[in-house]
Structures are given as structure tokens and as C-alpha cells.
Length: 213
Image 1 (cartoon, rainbow, N blue to C red):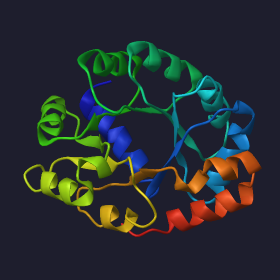
Image 2: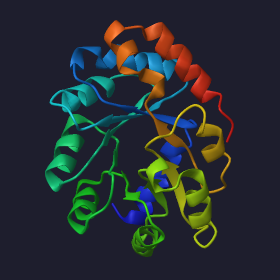
Image 3: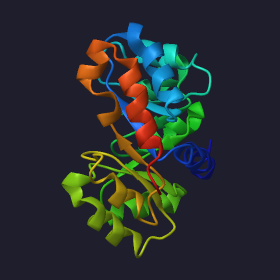
């Protein structure tokens, strides 16, 4: 898969809803009902971070949920890419981008949302064909004002800002012309997941899905 094709796919995924839930899952047994609640609330694109031993099994379970599009986040190595693809991930997300990681995603035909935090990184990715990128860590790198500034000379690049995005600052990010969607974890806090309060998560997802962009 070429970078151009990858960005075509990730753009379509980013346009499914204004928010992509960023999920850290410690128990694969809750993956399916969690995904069902998020999808029912209007957030079909889901990012499961590869930060726990349960992550790959969680992706396998979420891939079974009708209407959902599950991706693997925190891709760092070619091994991560292969494992995510085998588990059923439909897209990948990385905090940054390395030549080996980009090559692995191309070989595995896994659409990648590569991370960038500076104009130079965004330019380097655009140069090889990635017009849809992740701005990370968003708040630590200047937040919405920084992303707006990067967009002025690089209008060809669209972003999904992630990292420190909250319900309070989400509208500011979504109001930028170079923001396709945002990534956030507030719709499925650890407390709500531990309580298995799927109804509350569905309601938070519905509120997030209603955000304007």
C-alpha cells in the first residue's frame, strides 16, 4: 500500500466521526461490549493502543463488532505492524514515523496515521505521500495554536490531534481547517470501564459524536 493510498483510507476513517476514542485495555473480556457501546453512541473508529498484554486480543474482539472500524495505536516496530494486522486491525496509528515502520505498513497494506509534531516532520511525511497525519502530543506541542500555525504553510496536510485533547479544548481543535477529527480517551475513562458502565460510555460517545467540525 502506497502512502497516497494509506492517506486515502485514513482520511475516510477520520471522517467517520469527530472523535476517535483512544483505548487502553487491560482485559480483553470487556473489549466487545466497550466497542458496542462506543459504536452505538456514534463513534465507529476505535484506536486500541498496544500498551498492554491484552491489546491484540482486544482488537480481535472489537473487529467482530458490526459497524466498527478498529485500529492499532502505538505502533513502534515492524513486529507491532505484523501483529496488529494479524489481529484484525483495519488501520494503524503511530506516535512518530520511522523508515522501517512506514515500510512495514506498506508491505502489510495497513493504512497508517503517522505521527508528527513539527513542521519538518509533517513536511517529510507529506514528501513521501502522507497527507493525513496525527499531531502528537498535541497539547505539549503548543495545542491548537501550534496546529493552526503549521497549517498555514502546509494546507495540504490534514491532522488528527491527540494527546491532551479534552471535551473543553476539543471544539477549538475541531474548528481548525486542517483538523479532520481528534483522538481522546475521555469518552471511556478507566473508572467507567472498570465499572462496566456501558450506558454511561454510550452517552459520552453520543455527546462526542455531536461535536461540530
